[in-house]
Image 1 (cartoon, one colour):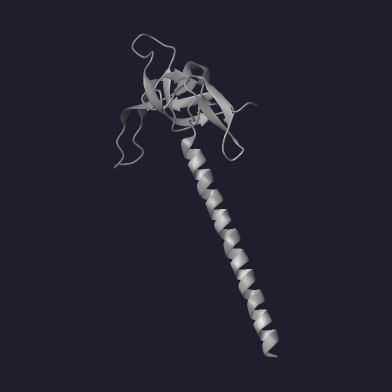
Image 2 (image 1 turned 60 degrees about the vertical axis):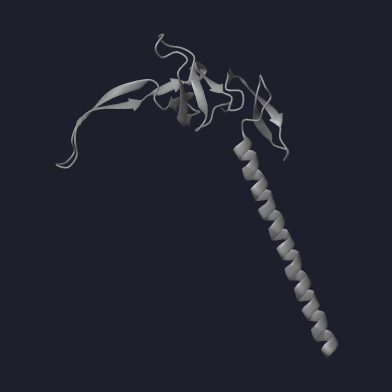
Length: 147
């Protein structure tokens, strides 16, 4: 099954529906790739009747967002602010990242920053390991020369 181009935390725009809901924007709360659905904050609100479970709990009608098919929403580019399709480009670390098809800006800037931090940590670990081995060999040589 193909992965989705929309991830939780993305800003999306609703492309279908009646005139009052079409072109509304909201943040993605959750993504279900198996069912090809997304749940968007503030869009497609449904009413659920909740029964009080104990004396402290209140019952009544509550509004919760319902799932929307991923084909009915479009990703909004964070840099140009327009709804766009997604293309995949090769990033700095050799991994493919999402990019805006209209302006070409990378959408996964946070992911690239996270990868850069991880790369710095692994490089720091390698240099620490080299320093430790250098110290050990130096102490061995000092012990051997003292004997």
